[in-house]
Length: 355
Image (cartoon, rainbow, N blue to C red):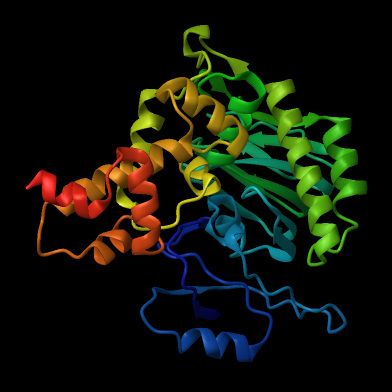
């Protein structure tokens, strides 16, 4: 009997036992004792065999944003994480080995997942209704869209590669590829299909790399972007041409951007920060912002800073220096220069006239 605690708020199905907290995989007695000493988490007990880890294979220690992904978190309890990393534009990847007889549920993930069965996998089934879908094996791929809950029956050994794509990165890719609202594009679920481009890219351009080396991380990022583009072009479908953005920002994105700017007028806002709030690349955001608002983002931000300074100048208790800092200008002189060029008045003159 093995008892332990695992600090992860998710559930999995292990064999025929449903747990309120997911168990960890323990490789020696010290790990078990350390886990039992953990406080604040549910305790589980289960008959199992401890498989000693090979001493010449160092254990990968996870430390990255990939730990936030639902699909990652449902595997970490009973699969061995061989490698993982984050590779620009919020894309992450993980390399797994799993040898277990379990059931796994991915509950409403907020990200898309591209999966490749590197080795094994013939015993895996996708549980859909009364008739499970079979067909797993080396070279088989799966597309698991965001917000689709799926159940899997796992029997035997499998080696997996996962590419995790946050929905924000996907939306940005949709806008850049099609210039339409991201909601107009659907990603279908596809299970146990063959795609030579996905397989060869992962096997030969991603798995052999050193994911911690800066040069290889850039190569991983490029390969991940290419796979996301391939997924978009080959498997997505457009639902409604009325979603076309016609060069401008949607009302929802525009409102979100305006609110972000207003809440951060005291900060040195950059185009990258604002475009990230919209989920767009800086280039596409600047073009679409101008189409929607009628002026460039930096001019809009400056105008909002000046308007905020005008309001504050009506309060005699506030010094011009304090107002400068509160509206994102580096100094009183900086505010005076910008304010004068915008209004034709110095802040002091405006204050005397506005009273």
